[in-house]
Amino acid sequence: MRFNFALALAVLAVAAAAAARPAAAATAGRLPEPCSGALLSDFDSDALPSLRNAFTMALLSSDAYPATLLPHASNAKYNTLVYQDTLRRRWAALGARSVEVVDDFEDNLEAHALVAASASDVFIAFRGTSTTEGWTSNVRIAPWKLASGSGAEGAPGGGLQVHSGFLASFAAVYPRVAKEVAKAMEHTVDNPGAARVFISGHSLGGAHAMLAALALADSGAKIGGVWTFAAPKAGKGDFVEAYMRRFGDVTFRWVNGLDIVPTLPPDLPGMAEPFRQLPADSTLWRTLNGRCVKASGPLLLDCPPASEAAPAEEEDAGKDGKRGKRRTKGREERCSFVMADHRLYKALASLGRCVAAEAEAAGDLCTQQLVASYMPAKSDDEGQRG
Image (cartoon, rainbow, N blue to C red; front, side, top):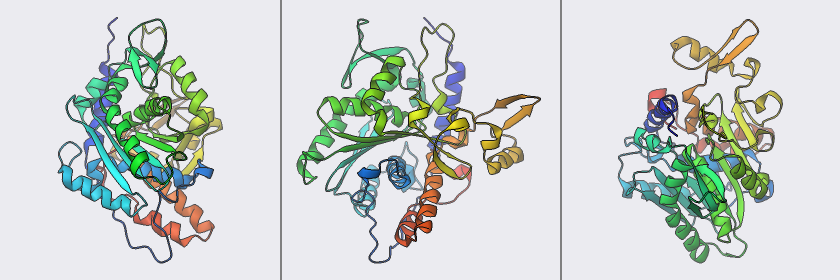
């Protein structure tokens, strides 16, 4: 059956254009002694929902975009050797013993990942799409049957229904990701038998993160947690239920502001069963109106009431007339999503401020200065990307 994907493609193309804009690089300052800058080796697996853990995983996901570290490059055109060297030096200071970059340039499916390892654990970050061509591939939303976490089959007699575009791009990069994880387990971590794998991803990378959790667990890896930022709907009901049974307790789905991408793919006429997002009541966290919180009440909605929206966002929207905003007409409220909220640097900056506020309240000067050292650099919207 043929569907009209024009609206969804247009929205995703705008997201891709925003994601492709280079960001000014964040710089790391010198921390006072005896402060530790080791975000990875100090990762708190006993307090998975902590905002500091979310900040760490968002920072790793952000650094999966080369333009984050190379301000004069784009995510599509950059010096690979310079990017890898900059990345490794940056994360070595944050507690990584090894950092490997995994790219799929052959299939042009926008599949990219980082695999970092500390002395105790392995960390993965999947990058989102940064070109319109990549989103053109990912807008293919016919479901495929996922026989297990590590493969797909077209037979209708069983398996989990997963977004075909997301699965295809994941399949293009996963074998090398699995290889790098195995190599890190063998050569980098001190105790492979106790090592866990922590996974994150932004946008398309969030869908890849969920698929990777299934695939790596099927291969025997211990999944410690999954953090997604602005992830779209990766599969249908059976996929969501199977995923939640295995990883629902250790999954943290972050949505920034009024980002539209987590509501995609849309429900389309003629579709027997729509794609589903992970349950909001158990997985959804939000950065909204200066808060970084586990969603509850009205924050569980894709479009929270106007009283929950950030005043600054509404003011900015009114100034340029281009950004999405809320309008109330009589008793009916309509929500227009804000494409700028899809940019990862915004969620990262919000998380950084929340972590710094917690640290200030606790008298933790080291964490305050650490977060300040790795906050996204301030610039106008034209210099930022997702």
